[in-house]
Length: 63
Image: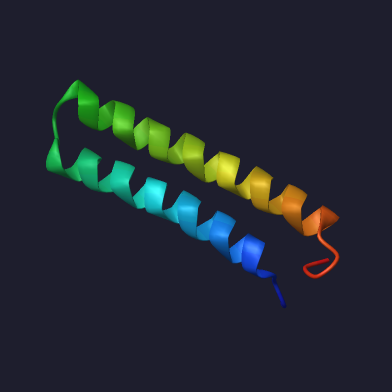
């Protein structure tokens, strides 16, 4: 699958956020902040999928 630079930039940004949230969750195990970070990581993953899907549908290079 060929993708454009914008797709890669979007994906990298979301993955960076997800990694940060997961790492925070692991560092703070057993706290309410850890649970919140884990939940937020799942929400960001869902938003990433939607954003990349929208981009893929509209981009002439990717689609």
